Image 1 (cartoon, rainbow, N blue to C red):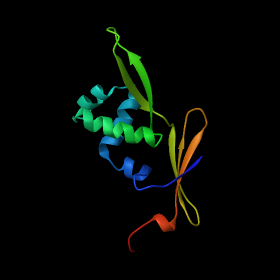
Image 2 (tube, helix red, strand yellow):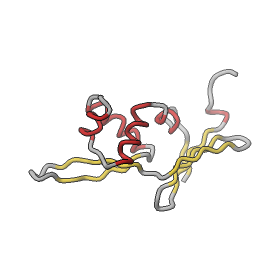
Image 3 (tube, rainbow, N blue to C red):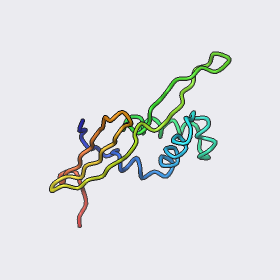
Length: 117
């Protein structure tokens, strides 16, 4: 599936060092926002915000757990195996490949790249 590139695209999301840390930590073990806020030394609201953006872009998968007292909470893990960046004649393509073989591709063309050279 190809998605239209937007200002909050995959590159912008991955540029955040906290996002990269969240990906590494959730790859090692499924983690809750509470765990991630402790590990990343950030507030839970900040981690929730990042996790939400990451899930929107297909970077994280959420699973609901129930603790011994019956409280529900979410744990997260990466939703991809690899990220591939390709450059063709008129687009930059970023493809997220999931473990099940499916993929999502984000495309950016010259009209959406701003700034002067």
